[in-house]
Image 1 (cartoon, rainbow, N blue to C red):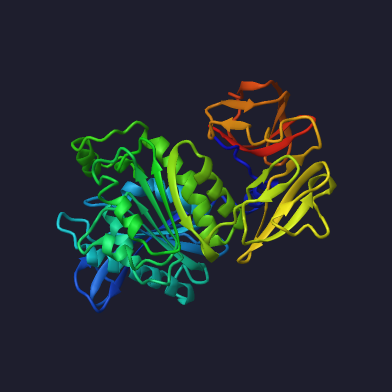
Image 2 (cartoon, one colour):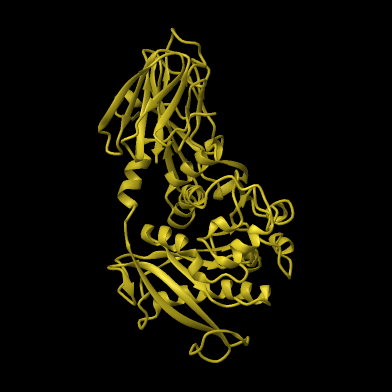
Length: 459
């Protein structure tokens, strides 16, 4: 297992940007004059699309004022015979982080039209963006220009119907997306925006080999990711829901984690992706990459190149030369021992410095990010000692295992850099206990000749 590396710069940015907003709620019935049917009334002539909307607010409540700022839109499609309120876990997690969640209530019966649902999802993106300039709406001046379409099961498949040939959204996210009529697999071939698909390996309702993977494989975007949650279920992306749970209970499957655990994996991964794609937080893209490479709870496929790809901040070393994993970014190597000062002329993918601690600042597609510091020493340890060091599990229930080939010190810090604990480590596996701590933390592993840093989650 690789060591999970994050920079202090990311946590500083995260602490500044994260906002614990209250959750406001309103109901709006939109209409499409070119179609008929739908759900709800009062939206005007044509198809009625009653939508439950949850948003960052000044205080919790119905039709309360939005918080200061503008917020990205996420339109969410529900599963087959599932209502919007089964997804309280989704809006309860994302709205406080600064997102507006829109849940259409159409096609909730036993004979849904997948194509109409896809049209609804696509239309709501436009309708919500229009409210930003509507002086009579509570959303006036509060809607950010970037939007996403997201959905579960049937709604996940319909999300690909909505995203086909749709350039008005930044990303499409499918949670156990189901094949639909018309075909979501066929529609995926027309999806060119960055795509993220989640799957549960224990899903017997929409088996991944028949639904999720064919959709993923058909996507033609230059940036797509597939995340299989080990032991995950089909219905566990939502809260407990009778219709979905009954179907899953009679389908079999090899579910080996709890619903709460699956929620945690989902949010650990989808949040940095949304922050990167919809808010432009570059360090969140690096966090997303690191999680896909190192999180033991998942198995991930990723195919992403060009302007949509997060910057890869990984740095390797052979003992004398540092090599950046990114070959396309602009490089500037930094001296960590000299307040991260830029080193004149050190702008290549590789860097062969004097003994010390170094990082690289990477610039690409408008993003700037910095790697963790890596130590170079002229003598002492095996040249690959830092690569042989592992820290796991992450997240941890309170016991952190450090497997290192040297004698050193493990130090734990809060996000402000305050030292919380210091423990000695010896060659081999070390079990370090932090049962009284919960949350996000920084760590540092040091010896005379090596310094590694990263982050750890204690649950």
